[in-house]
Length: 137
Image (cartoon, rainbow, N blue to C red):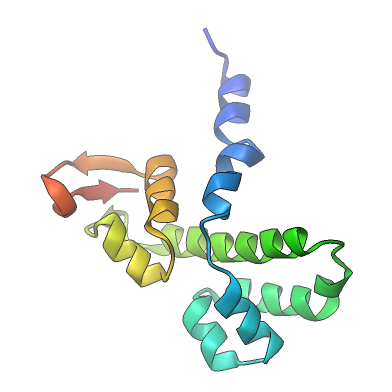
C-alpha cells in the first residue's frame, strides 16, 4: 500500500506537473517575439494573467540572456506559458462546460496541454458523448 507522502511525491513531482512531452507541445515563438519587440498588446493576448506576464517580462529583461542554451531558453518560455495556463485554469468556474478543443482555443495553446490539465487537475462530473464532455475542477 502506498503511503500519503509517496502518493504526493508521485502526483506532484516536477515531471508530473511539468512533463517534458507536454512542455514541448507549447508554442513559444509568438511570446518570444512579443517580449523581444516589447509588444504589450500582443503579450496581453498571449499571457492572460497579469502577474505571470509581469514575471515573464522581468525575467526576460534581467535574466533571459544569461541562460546558457537555446533549449533552456525555450523551456523557460514554455514554462511561463504553462504557468499562465495553470493560473487561468484555476481561476475558471469550478464547473467547466468546454471541450478540450474549446479550452485550447481560449488559452491559445495546444489541446494536448489542455487535456493534461484536465486529466491532472479536474474530475469528470458528467460524461456525455463526444466533444460535449463536461469536466469539474
